[in-house]
Length: 335
Figure (cartoon, rainbow, N blue to C red):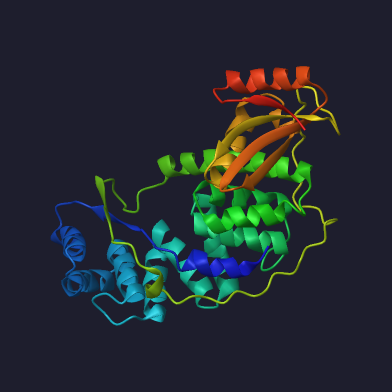
């Protein structure tokens, strides 16, 4: 797996919402006025509205000023100033500011300093941060090597549609054992549940509860962010094991064969990420499916998902029955 793909992740378009609080105080309403000006393309007016509020300590305005400085809209492009504004907002608990702070610090070369912020962002479900942290954990670079967690984070980033993460998963499959992959997929499912719970339970960024409304800033383009050159990735030894302790593997309720001549085909897809996402979902719903090996094969622009091996047609039919009961298509195949 090669960290050079991180360039594509960091230079991809960025759609970041501006948390906006509608209250009676005129200063708070002015932040929304700046968002309206930004969306209309009047970046200078937006900056003129946000700057005094940011200097007065408003975290939403500070985050927006970080956006403006990063993209060079309404002000001169200044990555150092963007980092400073993001940091000020992050200190006040602004999650999106912390996400952007870690990504921009990493992009600007402060990878060690960025890692704590990226780890927090990855825990919140930020796909680009999950990709970077997953890469670091896989290689033991800036983080203790942990192949199970690396595989879990890369799975989550792939499920979010990050093409580089899907590519990295294919490379990781050459080194990570089937047992570790199964543990990683199970961990990815747990992460998805925690991300959802976290989004519902996150505390408000203000001292007193107020209605919150979201307005999106227009996405940046790849040309608006300076790409980062990532260090080459050392090829891991296949014998290296994950650092984290693994939970006990569930006992499969369906028969398995170490070298059986049968598999079941679960589906064909135009994108590999969809195949991996379906495998993750079905592994949680079909008892014993995680004990089989997933086969994800791409040919002619079509990705096929199969599971196996199975000893006989009868075993394949039985497994297909369980998969169909979970709402997915399935077909026994003789290999």
